[in-house]
Image 1: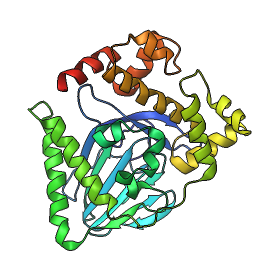
Image 2: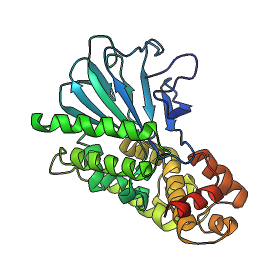
Image 3: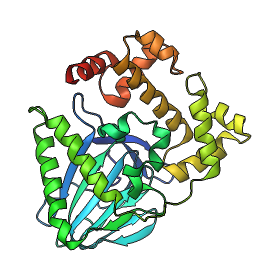
Image 4: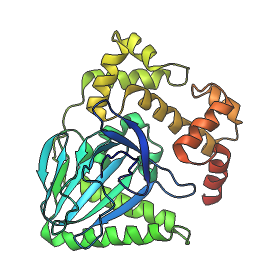
Length: 311
């Protein structure tokens, strides 16, 4: 789960996006056409992890839940070491630096890892990405949360949910698999949210202002520099602040908001791509297709057909 001289992916559904100046690789979720953006990985002492490089330090731009069936070893999150104890659930936000050197060593823990983007959850797919940080379903991912302990009587249920989720993802073409995946992931997130502290941390006022500005202007061809200047800050300062607080730089939030609106318009209207591009701050239909395909692994036209076929 980390970095080596060749590209290493910390899971079958991710690919290298960039490498930070300190050498930490950052992975994006690799959307598989026609499949929900969810993947499951099982760690146990009997699994062969010989293909993993010794240094597993990395970050990612998607959400990860780690459920520890049997404790052992540790993981460092943003430099703070966490012991992995039986029954714990760890929520990893985009951008957090993970050093998982001990998680898969022989004799250590049994654990499940679920990687996903909010698009996989119906309750989140239609919500502005600017509101994800404070959505009740993602309470365990909020700053100041990050982990919870499952009651002993509920642990077998967690293992059952995750095994069933892995089974549905193993055969995504069968009838109802997409709906089953969405339902199981939603149930897991509800259970995880109930483990979060009852009093969420207060939002950062400047980040709230940034998100308000994005919401007001994303339909125009604005840049990260435009948003920063509107608020009286340099782009570098604001990008660093937003990345530290939310795990993503400012420009990615602008892009994420635009892509959410693009998907809504594709799903709910018959507007041609040129009009969709013009109404979401993108240059033209060609640019829209390129960005959409890079993000979701499928063309907007195919995505629209598939969505309508499912509904």
